[in-house]
Length: 316
Image (cartoon, rainbow, N blue to C red):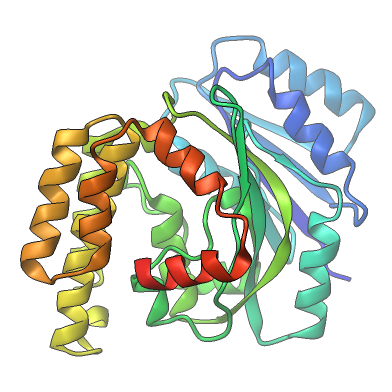
């Protein structure tokens, strides 16, 4: 069985970081290395990690000041990692106990798969709403990945180190979507599979200050990625390029909606409509008439798996 390294980037989260580390320690398939990267923390993060490391020799701390960003921290962790398999965990999330066991089972059974992601529980703490993401796509996603960021957050993913040696690390030019950018590069060189059951608790908020809440960074990242992979996208033809340009505007509209910028959400949805008429753009315009918390609540009420799949396929 291969060696697993886990990388946790953190910044001033000494209060909740132990929860993330404990969730790794509770895995039914133990990991071999836990690398905590403190990105310019000014609280007592270092003391907290050092105390935990006294009881668990697998824990290693990398700390520096001033901080840079999550990309930089994850890359520092990658430089230090010695495992054949690399997993990530954000400091405000937690793994469920069987995550590594279920992902490693797939790796061991499918040697041509280089990345395995998993379903997660999305928990909106302020709204009291929880729903489960449902993975849909596996295999060769070298085209599909441009339509949807199938893998989700870093906490959901485990990847072979040999794949990362081909793709390179996280792109330091990106202030958002750095994980999606890396998943694109992974999908261009390897097959993908998933664990259908939830393996992560992803804590979120309808009034969040997470990186994903910065609309300006998100828009820049969407446009940057579109240009970065222009040649790869063009290989699939003009209609596919048109579809991608429509999707970019719809994704920006989604983010504006999430961040409470309902007028901007309508504007981008209408831009998408002008490129290509889709039901998604219409739905986004309608959704922009309501607070995002109401949209999240509606999503959480979609309990039928078949209905979820029909909606997600339309969205994609």
